[in-house]
Each structure stands twice: as C-alpha cells, then as structure tokens.
Image: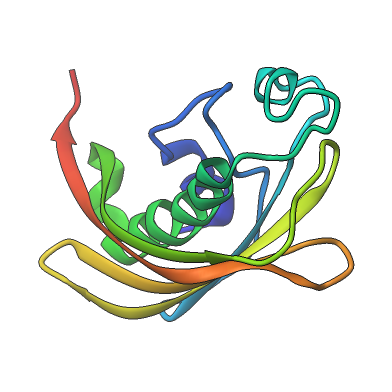
Length: 148
C-alpha cells in the first residue's frame, strides 16, 4: 500500500486531519509530519496573548500517524474495501516543550504489537529543531466498517 493510498483511507477530514505527509512507513514504524496553522481556532483561547498548541492535539497527531496510518498499512489491502475507523483505547504521554502556532512537528511511532486489529505503539513528537516535544505509549483498535 502506498503512502498516498494510506492518506486517502484516513477516516479524518479538515479541520480534524492532523497528518500532512507520511515520510516513511514499514511493518515496524512510521514517520509523518503536520504543520499547525497559525489561524487554527484553538489558538484564540489557549492561551490569551500567548498561544500554545493544546496537548490533546499533539497527542492526536501521534495517534493519527502512529495508530491510524500504521494500522491501515498493517491491515493491508483488505482495508481498501472497507472504511476504517480508529478508536484510541489508551494513552500515556509526557510533555516536555510547547509547540507554537506555525510550527511543523514530526511524529514517529514504533510498533510494540499488532494483533486482533489492536495496535500498541511507542510514539514521539519532534519540533523542527529536532527536540523531543512529547513521547509516550498509545493503543487503539482498527475497526473495519462496511462501505455504504
């Protein structure tokens, strides 16, 4: 499955699509990027006068790259016939640095296991300087839905 096919199968759309590119993907890991646009509504109130990207959105980037993209890849061609959904079942994330409006982040995920459509990954998010912004473990289910 190609990177573009994976992006087309993601069950998200703007404004809740947090994957711009998939840089690398194989059966063990994935790397993807996302740029936080300065005009995103979350920056109007988080925080007044000093906008910072909410941690829940940083976690979502890691989940969409790590669980959704890698999960679709691992599910193989059979998922092309169905509309996949992704349900995050657990996360443990530590935050170290803020992400400001306009920044591009790189998410890296490494598979811990994938069985019975459940995926568990070690994830990390980096800023453009290569500094680690946050890291942790996320788990989720790839749910295959019928088209139509």
